[in-house]
Amino acid sequence: MFRERTSGAFVGRGGLRHVEVAGSAEVELAYAVMAAFWGCGLAGEMAAALLRHGGERLGLHGITLTTNAASRRVMEKPGFRFERDIAHAGLSHVLYRLGPAQAGPSTSAQGL
Image (tube, rainbow, N blue to C red; front, side):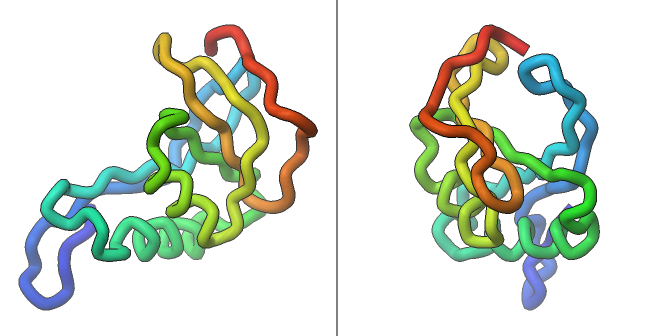
């Protein structure tokens, strides 16, 4: 759980979690920010704090809807790179991984 430093207001939540993505066991960087705090740079701060806590050795990844440009920018700032398009929960998502991209051109995956 993340709170604003000055007011103590609830900003959002985040963490690292084990998930299966396209048939592979992964560790995901997950975060959600309250709409009132969108565009304030707090998602990036949350992601950086979680990365400091989890570190690169976990092989961290992140996913977001293909249309969520803001979330893609949040992942790119601390060094996540686009890896591939995937299907998740019946919707088109993109998979990002911490470090250099590991795949060539984008390809669609079937379900998770």
